[in-house]
Image 1 (cartoon, helix red, strand yellow):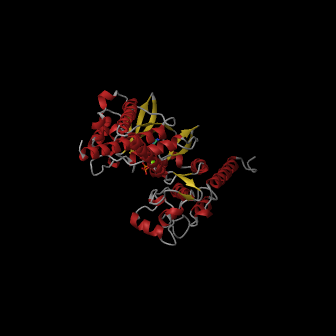
Image 2 (cartoon, protein in one colour; image 1 turned 45 degrees about the vertical axis):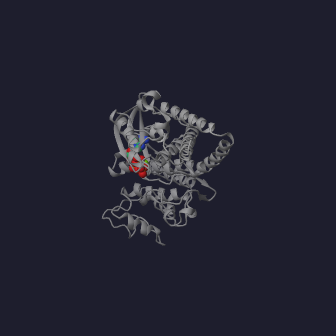
Image 3 (cartoon, protein in one colour; image 1 turned 120 degrees about the vertical axis):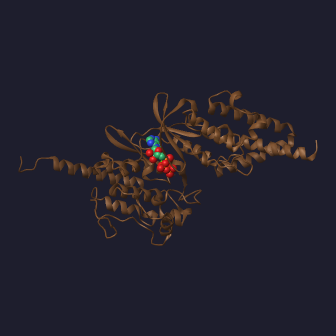
Length: 432
Ligand SMILES: Nc1ncnc2c1ncn2[C@@H]1O[C@H](COP(=O)(O)OP(=O)(O)OP(=O)(O)O)[C@@H](O)[C@H]1O
Ligand SMILES: [Mg+2]
């Protein structure tokens, strides 16, 4: 065999090795932690909404209603060779892994994942995290050494192992036998980006959500954002609003106790359901969650979150961000539940970004202050609401309350509201 043959052989080995590593990493990350759900077991009832990351469908799964968040096909970009990249897909799987490890009444429960279409699993995609990449590189170097010692047979073994893993995932993901859906090893390496998208479209045309997807519990009242926009009846009372904030603070306190930062806390990611005839909030979309290490959050080097809710330090000093960024966002949710308005509505995002990064920062107009320009001024929902909200917006993040302090303050606020309600419902001394 000539030189060209051996170099293309090495290339093939390299491809196969990468394929094996990615598959192993995905399997390791999900195995035993998340249930693999077959697309054919999920039947779309209706479309619930879409965001930056994907589309959400209400589906029936084994007779129950579930929410299925499918990755948007537009997020699966292709590289110069036309091979799909799996970054967004890896993010979705990471979100599933994070959610699956969390168990709290105020955090959305995950039931399982629908694995990516085989086109993604067998592509030359990037790894899922920098930690994993470092580990994999080490593993790769060890294998390379081993291969040099053992000669050509290792390449075949690797290819066979990779194929085996592909088949396992294919069978799990498609719920079909490989002879129907899977190509040969050589075919899979040449798989195209359009094939990947076609697989997603085909699932949809058959009434199943496209893969990959996360399957979670369905919260029948939808997002708090939608409820605020349509002035839902159950949002009228101060007690109900304080309770929704308390639920949010409890979920956040749990998350922070696990050294996790949400990073995308906003009313669209607060989902509501009825529990014992009372609305209850659960935190959703931990896609941006990062493990907090010591004082700083690792891996924050780009803008995260959704602009009107994000803390100024995310724009100004992203490397110093802590869980206190979530507290700022919590303050914006408090403001929304007071004013029932959209934060910074009508302000262009570029202007917002500019003002956020200015030294004095930017703050929302508080009803009852000169900044409030609206003709109608909503009353403070409960005593202490304003001061708690403004404490969340301290420019110095360390001075903001902790999630635990938010829980305590809101419990006190609810107790005060209950006491006030009791007083007004009791007959006065004169009436007795
Ligand atoms: N588990 C669920 N139960 C009920 N409705 C849901 C559920 N998950 C999402 N939804 C609905 O689907 C909509 C879209 O959610 P999605 O998370 O994709 O978008 P978003 O929150 O607006 O933006 P982002 O992509 O930034 O999270 C939500 O606003 C909500 O109404
Ligand atoms: Mg969301």
